[in-house]
Length: 166
Image (tube, rainbow, N blue to C red; front, side, top):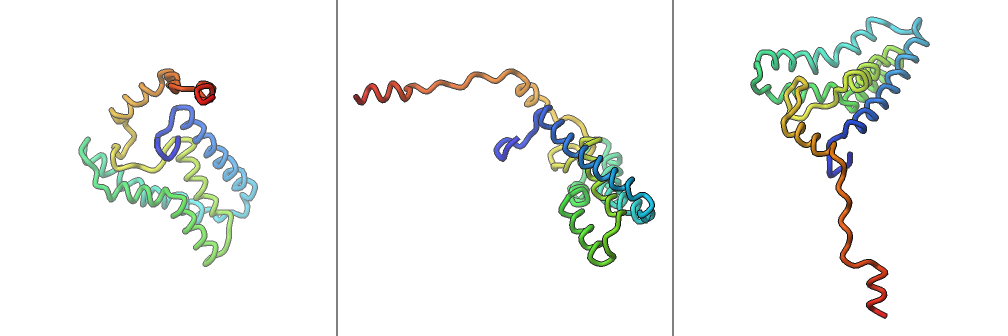
């Protein structure tokens, strides 16, 4: 929403996801348009490394914890591997050392798919590793879905103040 209210309403969440769906569509279209130029083993590797390092270890830890706490290192791994900063650094390093290639589109394809299709963004430490509604958020969401109260009227209007001075 904004810097002071770091949450999304249902509408802003879906709008944000829609932006990533556009990114997914563009990445997929470019990949398909250059199908014969893609080194597929590289593309599959670039697509998979994000979850092999960032998701699967945490998902296994979550299952082993059986509802208990998951160590923060798994959140850090997830967030680092699903970060545009890490992805940009990897793609840049690859392009600099190996050269640009269409297989690099697997990275934005993965990240845009996670956010646009699945609705998965970075994970805060305060929520379960696997998506599950936090009771505080459920309560907040219910309060936010109610119509907004009218803004309080100021005690004195500009017109009233100018008449008092005259």
